[in-house]
Image 1 (cartoon, one colour):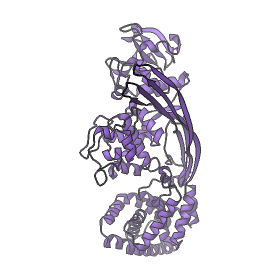
Image 2 (cartoon, rainbow, N blue to C red; image 1 turned 135 degrees about the vertical axis):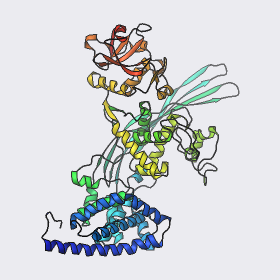
Image 3 (cartoon, helix red, strand yellow; image 1 turned 90 degrees about the vertical axis):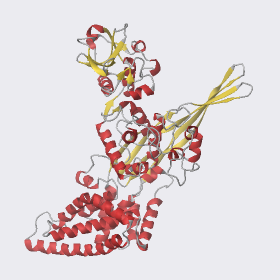
Image 4 (spheres, rainbow, N blue to C red; image 1 turned 180 degrees about the vertical axis):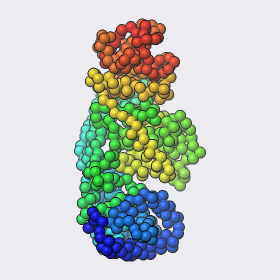
Length: 620
C-alpha cells in the first residue's frame, strides 16, 4: 500500500532494498528485450524510436520518476536513479515499437495484429468519424507495457480483449430530413421563356448525435442548411434553350458539447490492480506515442481545464459569435466557421493552416514542391490520386485549370476539391473553395478527435504538426464570444466589440467592402463597414452590394440624442446630408470607417465630427 508517512529507518531500508532488487530485475528483463531490439536491429525504425524516446524523455521521466519515487522515496544512490531511467527509456521504446507495430518478433507481431483487429472490430472502418473515436492502439500498448512490469495478467490476449471491450466507443445516430429542390425554364429561339413550378423531393439521412469514447462524451446538434443554386443550361441548335436550377438541403452541425471523463479508463486500470504510479506511467507512455490525454489531471481535480473530446467550439450552437484575437484577420471568420459547421474541423485549426501555408493569403504562390492555391494543396490531392499519372508520383502532376477545377473530375477521382462559393467550380486559388477543401481534408483525416494525425497527413513533418496545433490553440484562446440579437445592451456592446477587431487593419475606399475580395483585403467605406460589423453578430442590414447611408438611415427605430446607447447608428452631414455613418460607442465616441484612418474610434463631441453630427440616431 502507499505510505503517507516516512517509515522507520529499518523498515524503509528493507523496502528500498526490495524495490531496488525489483527494479534491477525489471531493468535486466527490459535490457535483454530492448537492447536486443535497438542494438541488433539498429536500423531506421530503431533509430527513429530512440530519437522519439530522447525527445520525450524529459517529460516521460519526470512523470515516471514522480510515480516511482512516490512509492520508494528519494533514491539513496545515483545508481538507483540511473536504473530507473534505463527502465523508463527501454520500456518507452518497447511501447512505441509495439504500438506502431514496428521491429517486432513473430510472437509480438501476432499479438499486435490481434490488438489492431480487436480495436477495429469495435467501429465501422468505412466511417472516418467512428475511426476517430476508436480505442487508441498507443493506449492499449501502454497498458500492456505496465502489465509487463507487474505480470498481473499472463494472458495478453485476454488483457487486450478486456481493455478494448471496456473502452470501446458507443455511437447514437438520429435521422434528419434532406431535400432536393429543382426549378426549370425553357426559352424558345425568339426569346419567349416559360418557367416550370419548382419541385422538391425529400429523404432522410442519419447523423451522429452522441458518442461516448474512452476519454469522455461528445454530443452534436444539427440544423438544416440550403446550399446555393446550381445552374445548368443547354442550348439547342435551333436557338432554343433550357435551364435547370437545383439546390439541396443538408443537415449540418451547428454545435457540439464535450466533456472529458476518464471513468471508463480508471475502472479498467483499477480492475487490473494498477496503482497511481502505474496510472501516471500509462499516461506518460501514451503521450510519448503521440496521444493527447489529461488522465492524471482528471484524477486530481475531477475535471480537466480543456475538454479534448471532439471539437472545442466557442459560440457555435449558443447565442453568440466569435471575435478572433489579433492574430486572425476577422474577415475570414465566416469562412472558417462555415468549414467548421460543414466538415467538423475546428475553425481555429483551419485558420492555423491558412496562416502557415500562405500567411492568410498574403503570400500565395505555387511552391517548389508543386503545392498550389490559398492553402497549398498538391494537385493530385485536390483532384484525387486516381487521376492518371498521380499514382507513384509526388502529387505534383501538371494538369490544365479546366481539369483541376472540374467538379466532375474531382468526383470521379476522389479528390478533396470543394466548390465553396457555388460557382460550379472547385478552384484552389479561390479562397472560399480552398478554405472549405482544407476543412474537408482535415475532417477526413483525423479531425476533430486526432489533430496530430490530421496535421501530419496535411504535411508529413513533426514540426508542422507542433506548429499547427500550438498556433490553433493560440487562436482559440485569444478569441472571445459575444452575444447576438435582440437589441438592448447585449447586442449593442457586441457590435462595437465585433467592429473594433478591424481597427488598424483596413483602409477607406469609397464604394469598397461590397464584395468578398474587398472584405478580405480590408477595403471598406463607412456604410459597408457598418453592414459588416452587424453581420458579425447575426444582424442582417440588407443587401451588402447595395448598402449605403441612404439604405441605413431608415432602418430600426429613431432614438433621441439624449437616449443614445452603444450600438446605435449615428449619422453625419459631410459631403452631403447623411453622408457618413458610424456606430455609437459611448462617452461621445463612435466607431466608423473614416478616410484617413480606416476603421477607428472617432470623437463626435468635439473636433471635425462635432458640428457634422446631424442628430439622426437609429436603433437596430
